Structures are given as structure tokens and as C-alpha cells.
View (cartoon, rainbow, N blue to C red):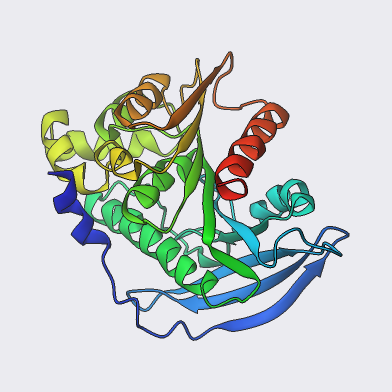
Length: 289
């Protein structure tokens, strides 16, 4: 059944990207490029590619981590990751999700109460990320065989779909990402959720029906497709934004190889510990493999 949903995320990989590239900033560790590229549905995606500035890189080409921010975030959040990972020889690629960063549209939100719009936002974002991988393959500095993924919260939710359908991702780190969207909508205390529940009530849509409607964009139906590529999960025991139970279900549905870490926290995880574990994990699968 899950394999049937993959068709929602198919697109023409031969379509031109029509890249626009400019210099964004430089730090001691990396140089960041601002890149715009074409996705599907006439969408132009703003992105950042941070390339390490190592004098003598260990590898002739850099492994790269594709990053997606959380709800309300933006592509520039990926530079926080670059501050840590560039010195280890990783490039970081980050995009603005639909209705985030430069793609904000007044009155529009990613988690829309209109279920058709919400589904399209999920699908658009996953394809935007896939087109981003197409972009990375055009850069001679990037090792296209060593591309990983990292994302938290919304980035973890979308990332679970992305790594299921995009086989070019070799390893993934997902933080506070959940599966079973109907349960998430039922339990979550996220600020965007009450309007969704009100819409469902007004339309008379039960949670059983919601499961069928949202199945093509529910991470629970994709996470197992990542295997045998490894995934590392970071979860909050007391998370009420992405409810802990939805995180548990996503981890259980994932197949081996996987690593699962639970923290005595809510939605906010201990960044330094997560980053250390993520780096060790990505080194194992993107550098040592």
C-alpha cells in the first residue's frame, strides 16, 4: 500500500533547474551561497549551500547534509548546523519550505486547515527537497554518493517522507518527528492545530476518515522504505507539540538499521548532545562507509 503513495512524489528529473547563484556570506569555517532553483508547480525555491573552507580537505569532494527547518523556521537555520559541521568537512544544503522564509504568503500556512492544501504543501516540500538533491549533483564540490539528511520537528516529519522516497539519501537524522498524522492532530498542542480540529468538526470528518485522507502524506507510511539506509531518531519523552506517542510509532515502524534516543524533555532537545550523536552517526555512514 505504501508503495502506491510514492507516485505523489514523482517528477521530471530532467526538467531544468534554472539556477541563480550568488554569494551570501563567509565565516572562518565555510562560504555560503544563495541559490534559487525551479521545482514543480512553477515554484521557485530559495536555498543556501554552505561549503567548507578546509585548507586540505580529507576528501576530494565534500559529503553534504540536506537540512529542513522546523515550523516557522527558514533556510538560514541551516547555517547553525554549518557552524558545527563545516569544520568536520560537511557541506550543508538548506531550503525554505513552502510558506516559510522568502516563500511566505499572507494568510497562508503550511499546516493548513484545508486538508487538500495541507497535503499539497507536504508533497511540494518533499519534491522541493528532491529537486535540491538534483541541484547538489551539479556541484563538483559535492560527493553525490555521500548525501545525508537532518531535520527536526516539521523537518523531522517531512524528512521521514523524504528519506522514504528519495533513495539518494544515504543516512538520516530525525529529531522530534512523528508519524500517524490523525493522532498528531488529535493530541498536539501546536498553535496551528486547533484551527485544523475546528475545520474537521465543521465538516464532520472523523479521525478514521482522516487516516484515509492523509495516508499519502503520513510519515508512518514512508519511514520503513528508508531501509536498509540507516536512520537516527531523537525523541522527547514529554513532547506535546509532536506528541511522544507519535514519535514512538514512527520509530517502531522504521526498519533496521536505526538508532533511537529518548530524552527527558519536551519538544526542545539538548542540542549539544544531539549534535554530537548526529555527527558520530553521519561520520559512520557518510565518511567511513
